[in-house]
Length: 355
Image (cartoon, rainbow, N blue to C red):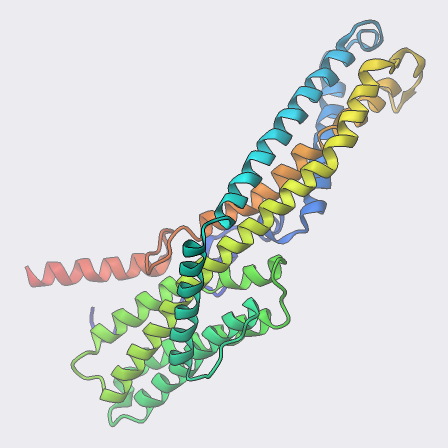
């Protein structure tokens, strides 16, 4: 990699890095899950109305056959099955929290050792207990080391040749400040705590730091080399911390899923039972904008029985998206980026020159 070539800084947000729209990111992860549940139910209802308008229909079939009873009878079976599945998932989560004394002691020891390592790197006596403040401590440590790196290269005799390092440090400081502000007053359990963590692309930061340190290894001042080492160590703490809080968050969300499905299950079963036992569509007459009133009512009641499934879908969309975005715990970048392509091309050019 030649001295004239630089490592360009990727976008600060996950949405910009993956090239997805604001609406998609909002729907998948940012929006309130109950609002997403309502949107899913509304879309389902609109689809039912659309196919009724454009497709071949027979209003008499709705009131003269046992189709309604069969439809809601299948919903009873589906709801009971989904509740059983959710309870099984909940038991899986609980199983991870239940263990013998030795296992619990080991978990406690691992967490304590990690906190002590962070406290040593951050130069503080006791690290915060709140997840958001603990993450802010990690990011603050990165920020401090980045400032130390910037000062070390700017005070060197030939600081011009380290402009790339200074630019990297400045970008790191700027992004750390943004994430630190977003984490302020964020409470665990709300997605407002996890979203900044997703935006903080620490794998790239580790990779770029190691690449720059290797690039200038022969000319880098000793103070800057030490600052690079401290910076890389601080960034590496962020990976395990993110994975740990992500695991807790997923468990938290699974509990919310279970509660939401269970809350909706009994009303859904009661409504389905009523539709099977004594609902009579023949008593609903007339049309609304050319659409059978009976069809409108039956479709709406059917959509209401889908509440448990809509809740499950809304929460799983966010959980699965978060899991996909955080598959790698180490300095591996799984998604193709412009910056990686540039570096790969530069390395290929070097190999060709050497041969």
